[in-house]
Image 1: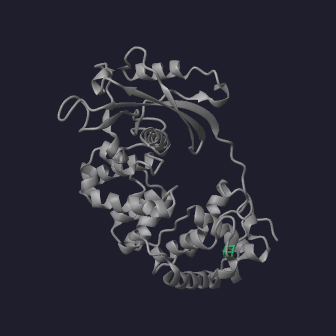
Image 2: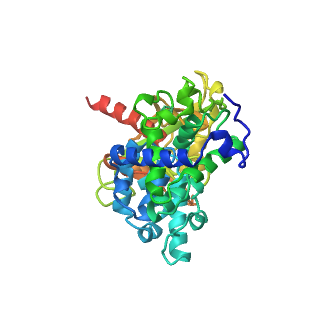
Image 3: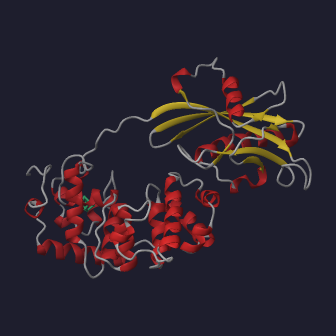
Length: 405
Ligand code: SF4
């Protein structure tokens, strides 16, 4: 097999043997296969560019099965670009909470405002125009332009990269500039001019359901006969696996402060029953703008020994959000949860403080600018907590259930 790691755009056709016959055959085969095999997904029922924009942003870095319910709820609450533009960022994050990679929600919101404020409410109808909106890169622009507007715009995502790397036996790190250029050039060459949206989706669908990362089902694959990776006998050697740096290991402590509401219609508690205290995170950085139980700064995991003084860290965290606990408040350990972000492996030490004097026993300073307050435990599932903080909530609920059993 020839070495194909440093191609130029000029010799692409020669190296990958993508002639007119191959192009025509791949288009026909993939379109037929997609027609017969595509999964029924809510965003495939529409050609509304806004709906496709929302789904494409949600599908970046999140599995289809998870996206479905989020997409449906989002479209119910923000059915069009105007509604989204009018919503506050807090409302947007509340709906996004749990999907992760929250920058996506912020870009979507900013993009909607840009469309409404500067483009007369019209979403650009070309890949070139779409790329000018915040958070829309070449992939998303290609997806919206081809699916919603029928533009023969190419696209490459992780699934398409894998399919191309195998179909054309492209060696080396798929993220190198040379390989990225090859993938995009191949996508541009192959995209079907009459059904570009279906063609692009057929590639992504093939990657998601047949040409999967570890166990491709080549025997069911419509393009097997043309697949150079399959012909090598080891298709999974493409694309090459590249060692990524290990996530940093850190620990934090989160404090669940629980109290009874001050009484119906009184005090800061929302409604009746048990309440917990939440604070909104800063607008920048990890999990920006989401709610959380008061949480300490990160400390390196290796510094957390059995004798580690979490109490001092928790007091410092509370001071930074201008919260004072009653004297002699005793914290109960609830357990430890772990959560992995793309670059951080986090250990969350959860603690509980029950305020016997009700919500009014918590003293709040006046100068703190971010949102913070009491949330009814019964409606905590609606709060914009990150997945990591949901694990703290789960430890708390398990403890609470144990106490009442
Ligand atoms: Fe992927 Fe196998 Fe199909 Fe090749 S034959 S594209 S490796 S599923």
